[in-house]
Image 1: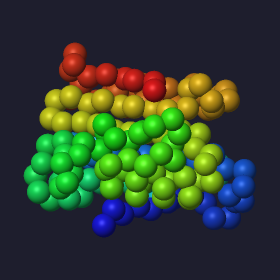
Image 2: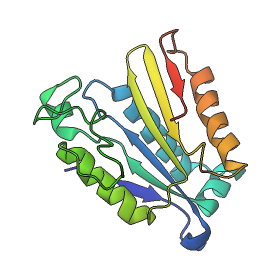
Image 3: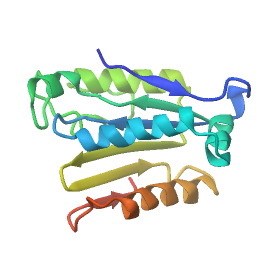
Image 4: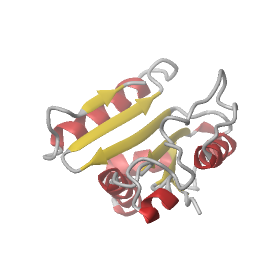
Length: 174
């Protein structure tokens, strides 16, 4: 099973909220990205500060903390049980609806598009292994300001505060 959950404040209308997707653990050895994903959900659920309140009131967060559970269970570094790398088959074709040979990515893509109504403002895809974190984020070309700057600032601040970052780490706005 690929588990997902969402966090938002149900007292505010969902129609005006920005939709943000957080994914991690496409590869079995990427446990640090999963911890970042879970840490963000813990912050949103438990913090009473003004930023957490604003985020819950104005956004819907969709969490997928482990996209490749079979690969994680089997101890595979990059592949699923069927031998596909979920990162290499996330987008397959000219549209996001083109089928992928990787079953896991098809399941997650379909769930994301159905739950968000094809309106994802940001997608944070956290890849990591010991000593090297790669943060991918989407939306820079389509998201309006100030959301574009806010997303970049969030990722940049996570990256700058992480003591495990080394020279091989990347920040990729794609």
